[in-house]
Amino acid sequence: MFHIEDKEFIRGKVPMTKQEVRCISIAKLDLKEDSVLIDIGAGSGSVGIEASNFTSKGKVYGIEINPDGIEVINQNLEKFGVTNYELMEGMAPNDISEIEVDRMFVGGSKGNMETILEWFLGHSKENSKVVINTITLESLGDAMKSLEKLNFCDIDVININISKNKKIGRYNMMVAENPIYIISAKRSK
Image (cartoon, rainbow, N blue to C red; front, side, top):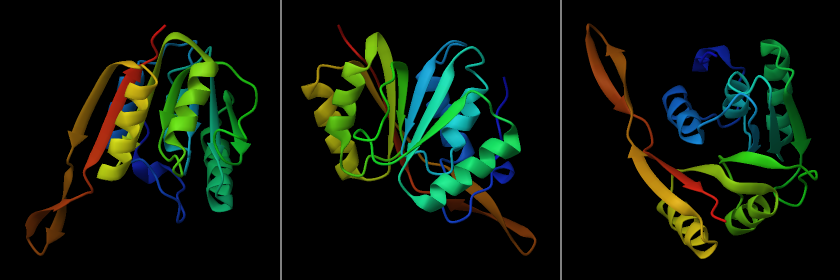
């Protein structure tokens, strides 16, 4: 099992969950070697591809609607030689194949958070886990409201603020990235 640095991913103009956020999100998923994960709004594929390292006897599914994202994910899958990942093209949850999962990562919901979580309830077993990343307060509110309405349990929210150094002459200045909310929850009975 290993982590992948941001600079290793082919990205293009597609959103990517950054390395530090990816590490925390994957840790919150609590993946097992036989976990079956779906990555909703897969973007560049960074979360699903890195997660595939932790699910050697399992499977990762990604779903992405953006044609640029689909192209970048396929390039990254080839680059990293990932064999336990299947990409679906389209909008979640309507275009997801009939699969059963025990983990779900939501990097983008296109405003369909509640229906995505309802899909998860219908395609997972008790104690399955979901991790949702958001950058806006509105998305955070939507996710929390939906998780509570659908009786998810062990709901946990963390906010991380990451700053990285940038060289300015002979000095280093810290430059902030967008704050990220990472929400994790368990499916109840």
